View (cartoon, helix red, strand yellow):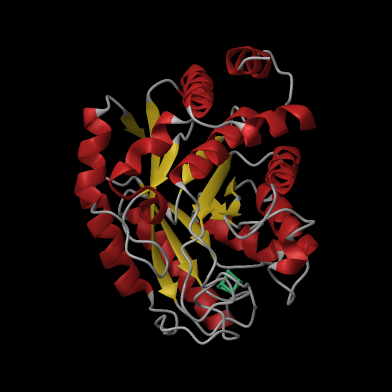
Length: 323
Ligand code: SF4
C-alpha cells in the first residue's frame, strides 16, 4: 500500500494496523518525504493552514521527588538545572504579559514535582485569574491532582491542563519507578472530567520501540485528549539518559507523521527538543503533520526566538490560532 492510500484510509476513519506502523517505521529516503507529504495532507484536511501556538513558564523548578530518567528537574539526578520554589503570581503575570505581546494567545504555568502544596495551589488559583484578566487563556501543568483541585482550577477560569503520559505503558517502568502509569492516566481522565481542554503526550527518543510509539498513540486516542504534545529527548548531562543519541531529523519527522496518521483529528503539538533535533530546519515538523508549536523557552532548555518562529509561520502561509 502507498502512503497516499494509507492517508486515504485514515481520512475514511480506518485506524492504522500494526503492519501499517511497521511500514512507517521502515520508510527511508524519498519514502519518508512521501510519508510526510501524506501526513501533511491529513493535517490540512482537518486543520487547514492553522497552527496552534502555546507558551509556558517554569514556575517551580527542580527538586522533584520523581525519578524520570530524562528529566533535569529530578532530585534523583545531579544536573546543573536551576531549582527554585514557586515564583508566585507577580513574576508569572509579567512573563504572561511578555508572551502576549509576542503573539501567544494561551499561557501555561508549569511546575516541577508530583503536586503543589496548599499555599502554592492557592497562589496558582490567583495566578490563573490574573492570566485570564490579561486576555489570555490560562493553562497549567502542575502534576497529579485530585478531582477537587481540578474543579477549583476550572472555577478560577483555567482553560487547559497538561499532563504527559511520557511514553507507552510497556516502556514506562524503564523511565520512571516512583509513580505508577495509572496515576498519570487517571490524572488525564480527571482533568477531562472537569471539563478542561487536556494536552497529553510524551517524549520520544528514550529508547522506545516503534511499537511502543504506536502503543502510546493508541492510549491517547482512547483517552480522547484533543491535544498531544510531542517532545524529543534533549539529553541532559547528569541524567541517566545523558548519553542517548539525539534522534535524527528523519526519525523525528517519521514520529510526527505516525502520530498524525494515528491521531488525525488531534492537535499534534511540537514542544521540547525541536531545535535540538532539527536545528535551522526547525519548521520541518509543520511539513510532516504537526498542527501546533510551543514557542519561547522550554522548561530547562532555551527555545527559538519567538519572533523568528512567528516570521517563519507567516512565510509558510500558516495562521496562528488559539487552539
Ligand atoms: S518529568 Fe515531572 S515528575 Fe518527572 S522528574 Fe521531571 S518534574 Fe518530576
